[in-house]
Length: 414
Image: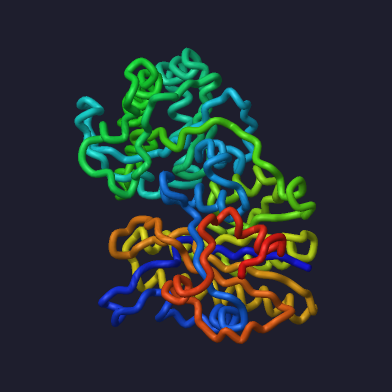
């Protein structure tokens, strides 16, 4: 028996006037997904419990069978794990975004916030920005003074490790979708003494990067400069119970998004890197389908994640959100299950949206999400399609961390 979870990130939404009172899931052409829904069970689950932020970190903890109230220790360590960065239990780990703020040499507190990802800077430009920071004498001295390390990646997502760091009592802004106005909104706050090392680093980063050659070139090319950093997603390194320990099963994760890959790694899943998988609408979906097929042949369990619906919703791009959902059906699920059916594999499959992402607000929303539970050995003949409304009318899983036990038939859904 093989077990799969396929996540369409943020694909659940709401009904909207421009779709004739329907949701993106209701208008999308998804014949394979709807066949699975008609032959399986459509229900709803709460992946992000009350009291937690609504995001992929909390939701995927639940989806992977870990109770967030027991196992969530911050997003930073998850992303560090995805990158293979070794961290100690005493280390404080942060996501360090390369961002864009208003140009000029005035006080950082008064500069306007422009872009949380510096125009989605990537590749050699992102690496050059980090090299510039590390080569700056004042910034390098601050890293040494505070016993910190800045680990670089070829994206806007960097990792800061603060050895023996203490962030208790500090608040780091996480609402990158809603930040407008002065940059001081993303400053850590709550304890002035504890915040000082992080504020110092942010100020020195702006000073080092404002007139750096890499940013002068980007301005001339009409691109946003990466002239600052934003620290958030703080957490302490923690070990999650592995899939093998809990269920005696091998597993793999096929994902582009660091937090999902990292969570998989922390749960003992093998990470698969797919060339051209970038978390955007133009990601390599066929490559993901092929990688998933390879993993299905060598593992008991595979989690496949597609970020594109969420990214399109954050951009307010309704047309491409629907397109991403349709491509999940036609370019990933259809060919993957076609190969599994041809090979006469028996399998149980969970298709789910980790959380809702509304095109209208461009933000995550925390109400229950619809799922499909399908078993290749049977046809339930329930005959309903995969929509938010049908999900809410189906079985309720109030704690999303029970979904994995349901998939593995350790506990019943009905």
